[in-house]
Structure formats: C-alpha cells, structure tokens
Length: 81
Image (tube, rainbow, N blue to C red; front, top):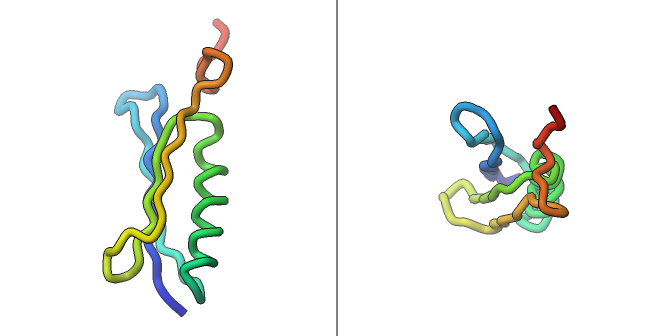
C-alpha cells in the first residue's frame, strides 16, 4: 500500500474566493490513486472552476487537473435573486 496526498482548490463565491480540500489516500497503485483522485475531484468541483494535484508520499506530482466551471455563460453557484 502507498500513501498519496490529494489537494483540490475550488473557486467559489465566498469571502476567500477559494475552498481547499486536502486528504490523504491509501491505495495499492498509482493508477488506483489517480482514478480515485479524478472521481473525487469531479464530485467536489460540481461545475465550478478549480484544480487538483495528487502527490505521492515523496512529494512528486503524479496527476493534476484543471477545469473551468462556466457552463452556458453562468457559474453553477450563481443564484437567481
């Protein structure tokens, strides 16, 4: 088993403008960790803009992603008032 570190930065409309999720993942292989990280990032981002980085226990980046969250000219966290 190997230890991996996932950090996701999600852009949102709040005081800081950014939400950061960090978690430690224990998986057997890089491929398993990457699959988990991609699915976790997709769940956290929910059509917002953001980025994610997965590092191995030595600190090497083994996967990263960046996604824009604008769909049809509108952010998913915009609200009708």
